[in-house]
Amino acid sequence: MTTYGDCRRAGGPVMMAPPDALSGGTGNVGFGSETVDSAGHWTGRRFTVRQENRLKAGRYTVSELMPDGSQGKVLAHAEMKRFSLEERITFRSGVSGSRVLFTIEERGLRNAGDGYDVWDADGSLVGGFEEQAVASLVRSTWVLDQHASPVAVGRERNRFVSVLRRVWDFLPLDLVPFLWPYHFDFETEGKEVLKVDRKWGLRDRYVVDILAPGLDPRLAVAQAVALDTFQDR
Image 1 (tube, helix red, strand yellow):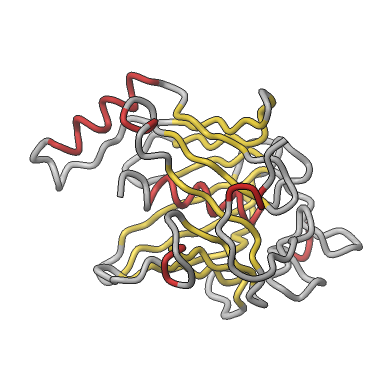
Image 2 (cartoon, rainbow, N blue to C red):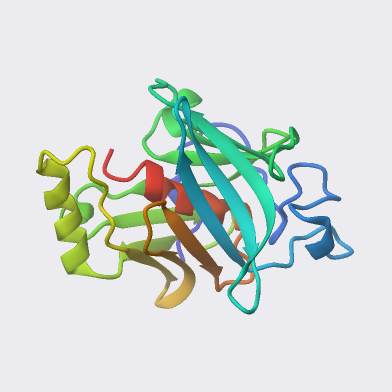
């Protein structure tokens, strides 16, 4: 069995985040207080991640997905400045709250290596992910790592859409977005642990389904954001 430590670079202690916790480092409060259990763990397993382009920055919002498929409370938000040389996205509480929940950061900003890491508000490493460049030439492939857990490999569900998306990138269509939905399935030892589905629409919207009880929702949400922002870089 391959674990997070087998695939990460050496570089200091790695602290394990509690499964299902979205406490932002407090240990008591999650994304939404109505959906936090007595231990302070986030109890939801389905989320919606929306991306909105603004004049000076791109904005992401994370919402709970209700059992009937409707969008619930906005749990977190993040803004990413345009043309920034640093690839770092910090998620904060609610629609406009200031409390830091977690940060996605390019691995090279702190340590050597490719890919991205997810850090909690206290600076402890939650996990990381990296696109597999060679495998992605035919079918987009990511490796998702969480400390003390088996590695999950995510592949684009539809090979045709994967190739079409790459062809689209080479066409002079910078102002025309690729609207066709694409989906990723993440598996560990043949068992599905995470699904990320992009929905139809002019604005990017992703449904995140966590299928493994031990997968940290912060890492799952961060991976969905990476599929939107960092893919093919």
